[in-house]
Length: 442
Image (cartoon, rainbow, N blue to C red; front, side):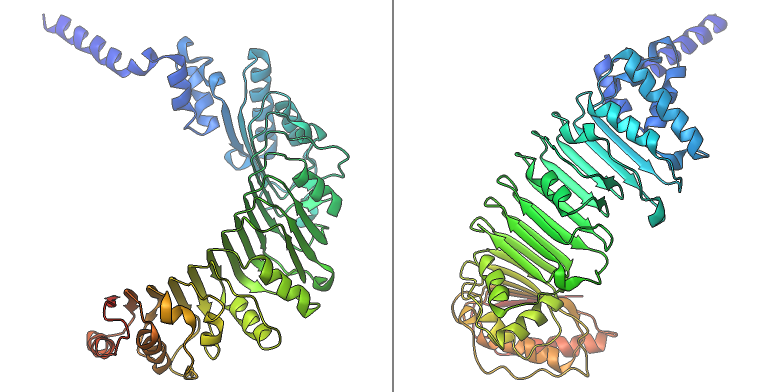
């Protein structure tokens, strides 16, 4: 009896342990899709039931770092795609990560060529931890005419000179640290995507693109970022013509010429990191005119400093629709004049860069229109430590903001006694708005 009971318990336990095998193939393949591809393939040894289930996975994610050497990686992916060919499975998503400094990447080009003709929807290819001389991974021509592709990310690869591009369904494209044949190559790639909505470009100094032209009738979001500065800044340019563009991000952008056409749809602009323009004052003013209709803007201290200098020599347009502004400030002498550009501002978030006891704040006598009629929310992101200039800034904003409802700041004192002293001082400051509440956190 005891032996029979033990046998039944063992059978029941085996049944419970294998409940997952009773699930339908579609659900098992979905579960396997959350595993690294190498681990998903290993499930094929569990039983005859599992032998081919991994082939139902629609996405593969493999990297050379998972293998002892590059040869083993190549052998694995070759066998993987060989099985897919035999079983006529559909790969909708492929991610390849190359981490080896090898001179021959022809196998990767061959793999991409294979999946590009099999209803691929999402492709992500990156070459990491490689020296510049190994940046020779060439994309096959079949990729540029993949009619099913929806999402594309290419990092540290080479794009050859292109005569024909047709990506009729592509919606998002991310291009990072790539090498292009010339300006026309990148321009053609962007303009040949009639449904492209989101474009992100990260550039270095050696991409062989002098003038970045972004012409798109469908683009809604554009981000351009530099990680290194070119030695030929004066001849560089960004020309944007995207009538449906709503979001624009420039980060550490050092192009001397920035031109935006048909910018009526822009609602949010970020001008972050270093900011540079050269040439005629008219062109500089035209750039700010082209973005003056936005409702939300975030600027770095470098941009603030550039605007401050430019305002001294040429009148800038007012941003009459802007309601939310986030800015990094390092020099405060022209803050009032700067805020005059935003007569309808409702929310102001400030970060004080490199600002301490030794910094001086020029007393601001004028009161911009937004403080008198629209500003309702102010936040200081930088911890307040009691510097005289910090107190002057807070006092200026509280005493001149007629409709302010909330002033938010946080303290960064070294001791509880210092914190209490600063808090008492802040609470005794006169407020122009009777409904203004000051919120302090630590």
